[in-house]
Image (cartoon, rainbow, N blue to C red; front, side, top):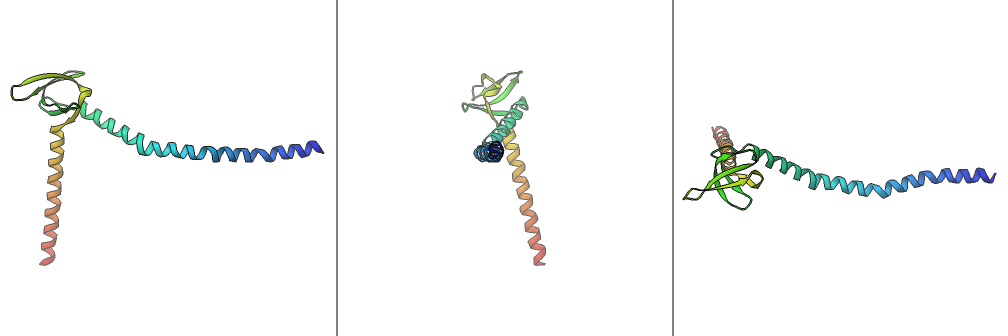
Length: 133
């Protein structure tokens, strides 16, 4: 009889230890998920965009390095780029990973965005004129 009581007490204790483990680790899991969506995932996205930008650099593009040097790409190899800077046409050879921004693509994207916004404004203006008539 005593053995039966011990067995019943032991089996009753198992669910409570499982529940206490879940309640102990649940906040940790939630924190990891929050960190993933707030920190890790956006950083990976930025890294992939930067990698794609660096792979798509063409000769003739104006770029800016991590150090702030602005120049025009005159030669591109597998892992380096030769840029021409300044009025005296100084040439620098830099690693591709040191490129921060492709100014040519940024300017094209900004121009396209401005044109799209101007088109929207024109459509809104025409709608207002149509309502007045």
